[in-house]
Figure: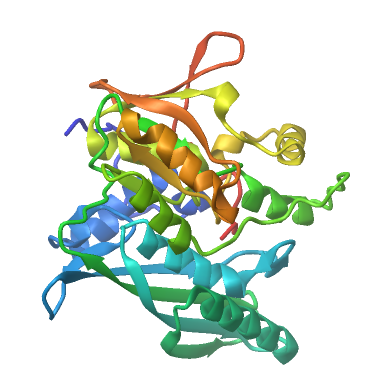
Length: 348
C-alpha cells in the first residue's frame, strides 16, 4: 500500500492537540502509531467503523463499534449529546451492513453538573434508543471533581449481527463505481457552530442527527452490488472519501454542482471561512456502488424520509496516488484533501 510520508509522532516529548481528534491526517496518524501498534490484531486491522467478529451461532457474525461523545454545547438545535450518543454508534454498526442489536453506555460526569440537565440528556438518549429499537443493556458511571471534566462525556458501544456473505468495507471501492450521498452536507457541524457563534439566519440550522439503520437497509436492498456505506462524521465528506481512497487504492472525482448543501449551511460556512465538505454530519450516508446500480439506489434513498435529498456526487477512478479531486463549478479541478488541523473541536 502506498504510504503517506509525514513527520513521525514525537512520542517522547510531543503532546495531544486538537488536530488529533479532527478526523484528518493527524488523527489517522495518532490512531495508527499509538493505538494501532499497541492493540494490533486481525479484527482491529480491518480498519472500518466497526469490527466484524465471529458469532457463537451459525449464519451470522458479530459487529462491534464504540464511540465517545464530547460535543459542546450539550444541547443544540435538532438534538443533544444523549440522542447523538445513540445515533452515532447505531450508525457505525449499520454502515457495516449489520443489524444493530444492543448498546452499552458509560458516563463521565463532572461534580456540580445539574441533575435536571442529566435527566434531560438520559431521557433523550432513552427515546432515541426506543425509536431505533436498539436498547441500552449495560453501562457504567464515573464522577470526576469539579473543574476536571466538562459536564458530561458519554461513550457508547454497539453490538450488531451481520449475515454471512455480506461484506461492506472501505476496501471494496473499484474504479468506475458511483459515489452517492443520502442528503445535504454539513448540517450537524454548522448547527453546533451557529449556536456557539450566536449566528442568526432566516431559518434555524438544525442538526441532522438520526439513526440510519433503516436507510442502510434500503440501500442494501436497492443495490445488490453495494460496495460500502459510511457515515461522514468528523472530517465530513472529504475525510471519509480520503479514507476510502486509501483503503481501496482508487481515486475519487466529485462534481461540485451535484453535492447537496442547504443554502443556510452554505452561507454559514462562507461567513466562517469553512468548507462544507469538511463539516461533520450525523444523519447522512455515503454509498459506493457499481455505476449501473446508481440510479436505482438514489431513487430508493429518495423514497425514504432520511434520504429525500440523495444525489450521485462523483465516481471512483483508477489513480495510484489515491487522490480525491473535485470538478468545480468553474470547470477546473481542485484537490479535496484531509484536514490539516481541527476546524471544529468538540463537534460530536
